[in-house]
Image (cartoon, rainbow, N blue to C red; front, side, top):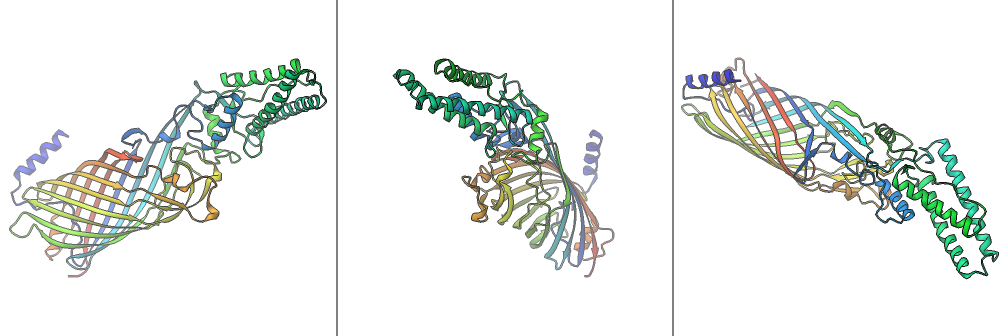
Length: 526
């Protein structure tokens, strides 16, 4: 690196003051077809959320792992809380450690045609590979729950048999108690009669709540407190206490069995299998890796040069201003809602943008200023309707959504220093801001009862700043084309690197991006 910098410095000192290199041209010369070949590699293993840096897959883990990430457990929490007499109870599966990395590699094929000295049309087709690698590890040290062995579809035969025996015994004890109350067994003892009636009422509610959370075909919880946990022991003690009251105090002839609980705490392997179980509530792909290689979203548009007074004969530097209109077509592949890690190769919608670029320079120094506005049009998407911080949404929430992504405003500056006749060193600072997304059900038939489609767009407004730098080479032959002379071997190229250094609002990946572009020209007419 030191030798390379010394070489650049030497070249810079030896060159004449009349240097004519700048950043890559905005448009193609009149009558010239410019072929474009580019590569873009982006990677991120972390992100910004509300200005704070966290792991890329932070939403998939956390402490007290439970209904905070899996919304379908909220009902189970409520029922178990009532049974335990703890209004704020929540099933705790432990601490889910989640780490992930997103990489996006794009090969870009494109072409630009200079129709006039000011107007250029272009098209670009990206070939994209997206890959998400995940490492999820469940630490059950602080957990109190595991798999429900009596679940109607996820449980086992022994657990389901034990549950049936428990509730049959419970029903027999309650029937015996009710018969004694109706038969006047406690009529001579008002206190005992009152206790019997109270126990009958409360025990019936308790039985129904336990049945719902344990083996109800529609709402049974996939997880229950483990037998060895403090919560499990408390629940067992409550049932044993009730049984003792029924048998010893009220003379009921049937003792209650111990409730069905998880045999042990949940493990990482069990949770991974649970998420991918087609009979389970989530019904997703295994949480290991997602990879897609397909075409991306095609871009077509035009560049119009309003002013071009850059590097005129006898001058160095000057001013150039051009505007670009662009449409992005949804030719890429969308993410699969069955794969919770998926990142598609395209946005799945039409996008229309307008941008401007101005080059200013004097001798060795110059700058390119850019600004743009991208309108992202409404599109139909298939989504699991859930808050972004609850990614393990049940498959029953999968439906059609009209998604209107927020528009994007972008600003940028690329100062450059001319090292040699055709070589420039550049820096870059970029800012972008995305507005709030909006979502609604596509039709009344698509609506999920009790769930607003707006939960999908929570904290969707965001902004970011990226810094970077690079090198650009603009061959002499390109300028000969611009001067309407023979092109010779026209070529220009650029390399750049940038990284996101700050962000506000919603989720913003901390991308590290490397871009390489090569362009060469073919004269078609004069």
